[in-house]
Image 1 (cartoon, rainbow, N blue to C red):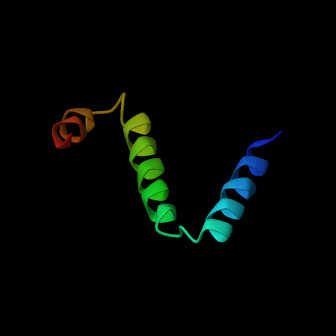
Image 2 (image 1 turned 45 degrees about the horizontal axis):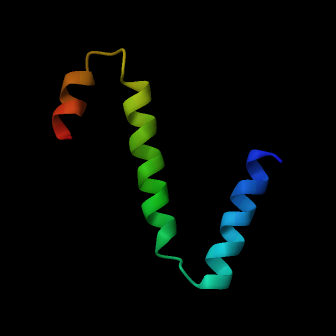
Length: 52
């Protein structure tokens, strides 16, 4: 089982259950987590953590 199979299964779930509104929420969560991980060691970290 690879990462792509999880993504494909999630996409099938969205299509079958017609819950397309979950996709933007998931994308935003992934982007925010990526920003936090990448900025952890930088000078931007105090500003990012102040948002939360």
